[in-house]
Length: 80
Length: 481
Image 1 (tube, chains in turn green, purple):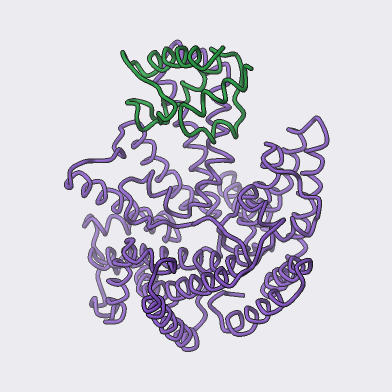
Image 2 (cartoon, each protein chain N blue to C red; image 1 turned 45 degrees about the vertical axis):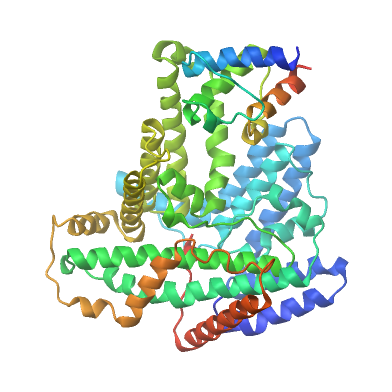
């Protein structure tokens, strides 16, 4: 799976979890840029991503994510 | 030994600094370790053993965790060991008291004095083993280095609660240079002045009010007491943290900030990211987030998620995690119900902010002013609960503040405050905003400006020293915890 494919999947997960019709994710997108991405929605997002890609984040990985780009890097590393 | 005592300022600190700077690099750790143990033993000779035992348990625990497969079990055992000391010394009698009251029992209290700083160094020890467990750091092979991390006297008795992963590199390798020493001395003086000139002055007012029987206080006096206490505790504790960070800098350590102007916050969530940051982030990293995550991975979460819908289940889950975390944050402050109530009270407002989004940034001035007003209101009322010896006293104090009760005042307001104390309150209020936050910066500043700041600090130091010499014993509030 490459970055574009991961982005496509992530976009679907975000749309579904945050009840958004349109969303554009980029490497520098952070929670502040996306409406409805608060700490509550974050729990569900992480759970949905783990389910979709079939792995578990470690505690320190969850804590240290700063933007969508880092999240994609981490997913690549996990499934690669 | 208090930072704001003559023994510390004019004997201990100069001697330790001189030794530290003079000895060879390999010996610096030992100088600092021995100084720290001496510092602790000065007030608490009997309990040095407890602290040393904690060090040994965590030293061995971490090495075992990194070697064997049953990591989780070993981690739990080590943490259990750490917490059992804390429980015995800090909470045992509290439980006895409550069990006796509930079941009309007669279990005897144990005769025990709480070892100073135990709440702080226990948390540092836990931070170390959890960091090793999470593979964020390597286990420390040299026991004296781990001992240095736990006992380091600048932060030993009242924080900041330094996390192991933040200083792991500095423990192995740090340099001492003139700039760090200069910054440390200046930072220490700022802290000393905050404690001695403002906190102690306002503390005298708060003490006078809060030691009155509740039926002798009226509305104005109770607000005066609550506001003075709000500024006293900020200057007391942030002043202490400044001194700790300054001392750390003298010995080449860079501790994270513990206070970043909490009273400018626009929500309680923000407030707790600015107040006693090292404790809040400890609870966040080692309790709240892991708990929230463990709950979200449980089977029940999946089941309920379908039944209730995503948002509701996440609210429920966060509520549970907040409840547990804030109950324990309150309890960490002291073995008493008013501390528990204080914790839950803060957790309640944070929960409200999370679900309503009230803490989001407002654009309009009025909106931000409202948020600020709400925050300080909640903070001040919270400190009434915090300061009161019993919940009963806190309750009647709050009723008096809102005019629902009114005592027979024996004294005029003049009895509670004099001119100096009013000045301290005004200066305190102004300086709790980041107006001179860049005062200590030297880079890019003119020589004249640096000299002026240094002169000002020298004046503050002389004033503080004079005040210490003239005053009676004045411990820090957070030494109790």
